Length: 338
Image: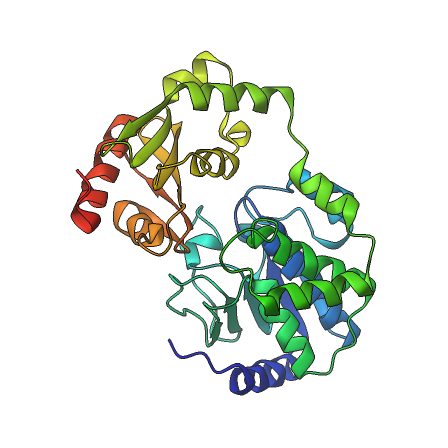
């Protein structure tokens, strides 16, 4: 999908100008890029006199961003709670597919509502009336920053903070390969507007509970190597989770594969958490984006799979053991590692 920022920016602004009631949402298990995008866009829209409703979506508020007082800006509503026909425009941010809007029902848009998708995931095929998919951008907040520059928006302190946390999180704290000199320059500009970002960054990275530490220990104990030590999976079956009185909310979905990726020679890693019997959530990482693209694996192995070359996720409608076998089969089919 060709990315034409200036051309699409004009189309998006025209649609915003025409709209009166606008809907924003957060994707399931929202990360700082999802939250930051919604909050920054909401503030901009309201400064234009628009009536804006932002909803948290299926899975609730992330605890690592509680200090942002999200309940004041984002309503505790699911997508199914909203009457779509009441809105002129639905701005869909940081959601690579319709299943990232909701998993609880089929997503269909009413004819009277314009849909605009703004995203940076390479697996996004563009399902809106207008699509701005910037796969070379570090985050959706990065794209929004560029849009605001084109629209001559004066970025407030709160907008700067929200844009900053999205960039910070999706670059892995400025460690991933998407941390370009341009990205660092933008982050520096945002930090100069709001230099009080340290406490939020600390909360993002340091908010674990004792039960999550227990989950982390179990996940690492149940990690196995495959493919001559090039692949490693952490596998938590439904029985293990229930035996230890844990839940998916304690699964540290992103943290476990990030820890696994830190191990030398483990080129492809994944956490497998069987959240319901016969339903396993998979989070994939690679430390060798020059060779491997885990988003390809995610798309082939499960439903609603997607992400980036270095980090991706999916849900597989199989138990943990069967999911492991399917992952190994797909990895071998693509990269011949077995």
